[in-house]
Image (tube, rainbow, N blue to C red; front, side, top):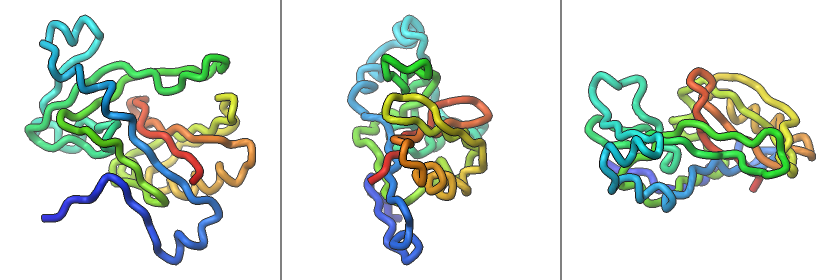
Length: 178
């Protein structure tokens, strides 16, 4: 069995004719590593908790925001609050719940490719300008994400995108022009 690397580039003819190249990125791994050494009581003090994926979770496995891959049965994740939009001057500053899988040390990066984790969920995609002000948004199935990226990045004022799981509201990933 082969495993995908953490950086992916799509080189199909469709990708080469793409109007705007894009990168979908997970969160940096380092800030979350300390949580795995904490006891459950210590995690609760941070408003966090430990989750071990089970067979009962299939279909709703914890989605890691660093690797952009769902947990597998037996893997441990930490559920915690994360401030994902931190532009100080923006009224759209925001944070919310995320999962991070234990043992993930590299940030996922996908160039011109939508990972399965995002492709299989209903997403709320939010377009922001350079000042962190939301200028557009859409809710759509993940398999339509490439079209939304192209639509939003066709607008010059759009600097970056945030995708969220539309049903549970969790931050999913950041999307930038390449």
